[in-house]
Amino acid sequence: MIYFQCRPDEVFNLIVEEALEIALDQMRVLNDTDWESLGTFSSRCLPRLVALKCFEDLLSAHRSRDVFRLSDYLWLLLYESLAAYCEIHNDLAQDSPGGRVAVGEYRIPAIDCDGLCEVFFWDMDFAPFPEGMIPGAELRKAMGMSGQVFGISTGLQPHSSELELTKVNPKNWEGADELLRADSAEYPDFPIDDDGPVDA
Image 1 (tube, rainbow, N blue to C red):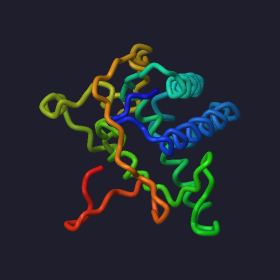
Image 2 (cartoon, rainbow, N blue to C red):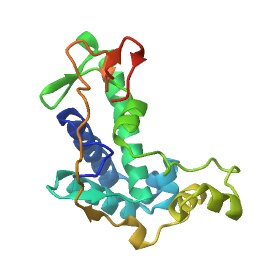
Image 3 (tube, rainbow, N blue to C red):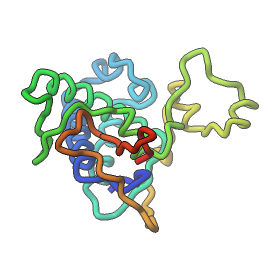
Image 4 (cartoon, rainbow, N blue to C red):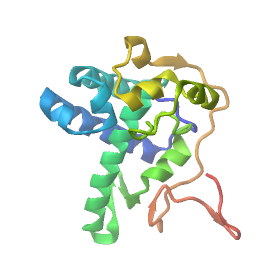
């Protein structure tokens, strides 16, 4: 299992499973030129075969009973695969009766990718800086910008140690509130109180 900010519910587990399976299937048929032409941040800094191995490791970790912490490079790969999956799912949902698509045993409305990140990702610190806006060394230090984020932003290939999964034993790992209901217009569907949305 991947160590997310909160313990995933069944729906998110299924979404992660399908997103990684699709990404892995695509990686297996792409050649090096296809991969590089995608223009994603991960395709800029990871050779195709390295990225393929990373996706295999991510899917294996997701299916494991053990819990693993990800590096910034692996968070980036997971994020990009989830974003691509959400785009495909939402296109299908738009054309489906009731605006829902089967994901495992559930019928899921449109998926809010930003909402997924808000609930399950620890932060978005792995997100690369746009080209031409990468801060200098002193500012990077002041910001606490990791070497991995700098590498992602500049297209540097990672050292093998930067792609390792770290086994952890989380304490008091709480699950998210109910994020999918019969009347949900999107997933995750944040609880609402009288003052508006509350944090899930």
